[in-house]
Amino acid sequence: MRIPCPYCGDRDVQEFAYRGDAGPLRPSEDTGFYDYVYLRENPAGPIREHWYHARGCRTWLVVLRDTRTHEIFSAVLASEFVR
Amino acid sequence: MTRYSIFGLARKALGGHKAWQTTWRDASPRSGYDVIIIGGGGHGLATAYYLAKNHGIANVAVLEKGWIGGGNVGRNTTIVRSNYTHAGNEPFYEWSMKLWEGLEQDLNYNAMVSQRGVLNLFHSDDQRDFYARKGNAMRLHGVASELLDQDGVRRIYPFLSFDNARFPIMGGLLQRRGGTARHDAVAWGYARGASDRGVDIIQNCEVQGFLRDQAGAVIGVETSRGSIRAGKIGMAVAGNSSRVAAMADLRLPIESHVLQAFVSEGLKPVLPGVMVYGGGHFYVSQSDKGGLVFGGNIDGYNSYASRGNLPVVEDVCESAMAVLPMMGRSRILRGWGGIMDMSMDGSPIIDATPVKGLYLNAGWCYGGFKATPASGWCFAHLLAEGRAHEVATAYRLDRFRTGHLIDETGAGAQPNLH
Image (cartoon, rainbow over all chains, first blue to last red; front, side, top):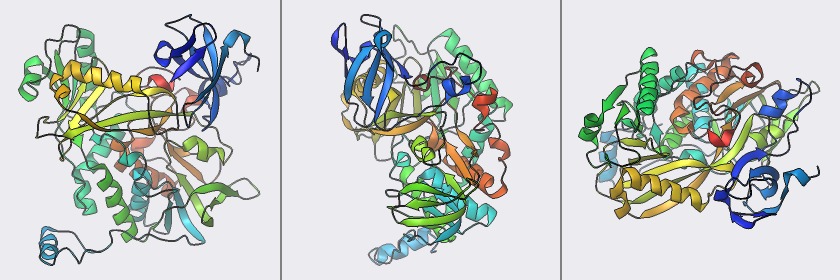
């Protein structure tokens, strides 16, 4: 897999660290933390995920990827990602 | 059912092997059952077998969307062991180990269980301390373990790279009772035993939804072969647990990840047992056909693809060359991927769900094969008795909410790191 980093261009997946599903939102209250930390949609199909370009520009990305084919559709800076 | 024996084999050999009967019955769905097991893999078939054998519940259907044994029970590295550290895990896996030891006599089926020993190497002082602690934890649960020094490892595996500059082999933790089993035969053996006791094994029957009553309880399933009603429904669909649970409006503490495994061309006997490298993540044994069966880490990102990517292949082969340089002379014959139910603490779930009538057997991570007998035993107990078996009390679904995690690696809720 190659991830199209907005800064660095297409880079090998080994340069990135995986954080996981970008869907869960950190709750502001104590309630909801169980859902946030432990429960996942775990879709078979497109999923938005956090990847960190650890051996590159060191930015966090939101990558849209298909879990059935590993095809990557897009990558945007997490700081600029609009839900 | 005809009992298998050496005499029967000889008799049929003399008759040109024409008299063999079908091992198990390929059934068509009936309108209803006492219990439906979703998933005709090792765990589902074992559950059906023990429901019939231990609890006298034989009005059972096992629903499989493809063919039985076509999922992870046919895709693993066939290792069986019970070398766990945590009190929630060790009694369960040891019960599984005991069931492996008597499995072939119980099933009257040759599962080729071979207790050739599982050796985990250590390469540093702190790794030795970790394995000493693990060995002690095993002993506290009555499970034999031996901490070998370098000479002890040399006696069994004289050909390893002992003087590797970065990861010299200092010794290893050995469980002599661990080993391997013939994975396909485990599925077929349980299928035969269950089928013989009246269980319907129904293939090409994909569950597409749950039938619910007005109170929300599940009372059956919609399948590609029509709707089937049931008193209780058990899910044993590791790899796809989230997808099946979603049909019952459940979200699970599980992510699906791909784990690759590989086999070399057939070689004469070179490896006496199961050897696990401690410098990276690499484990290898030799099948009775002669192939070196080996694997490493999961690829590290969510996947339902049943195939992995090349960085992990490279990583596994680097580890292989670091500890077992002679492997470089053999060629890889095949590689494949299986989809793992990675739970949030690396340990499984055998429990009732919040949906009445629906029971969950899931979250086996990359270690489900060794658990097959005890998983079936305990899931059958849960389905029949309505409460957890004594060696599976820790495998609760709500432990993530209550904080009673069983985290062997201590990686937290980050399944790609378990």
